[in-house]
Length: 192
Image (cartoon, rainbow, N blue to C red; front, top):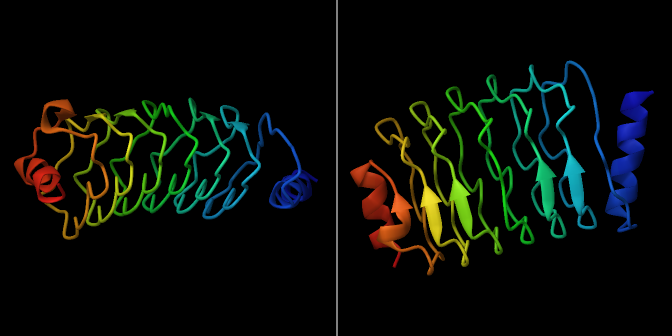
């Protein structure tokens, strides 16, 4: 019943009807890829009751949710997630995003994770562990209002791809980038 309900909710959102989801709860879900992809009328989403303990993939999960302004991921368990490619890509109305509960120790792909988040001004990812990440291509690409970024625990020693990491981020200056990785810092100056 819950699976059918979640499917019907997403169908309605894709029809551009005005609809607000308070929460979806589904046990034992492993793949959340494209779950809310192109839900362009979705404004607010509360996943604080979503059981995500077994989730391994969140690629494009919220991508192209153009109207999304409020996203509660306070209890979203990402301990087993390995792929976060474009998870928030194209969420052009998001101004704030609290990912302090995210555990990224097993993530290997973060490419385009925040790409085209046009309204995102500040982002604190100080809790992100990137020791396993191999692909960070376009991670913050085209975030024109991003002016403060804390990636103080980012490590790039295993990262093989990091092209255009900060491309299209004219407001992000080195003095507003909290980062201890010299390779990543150099990428900021490369994309200016």
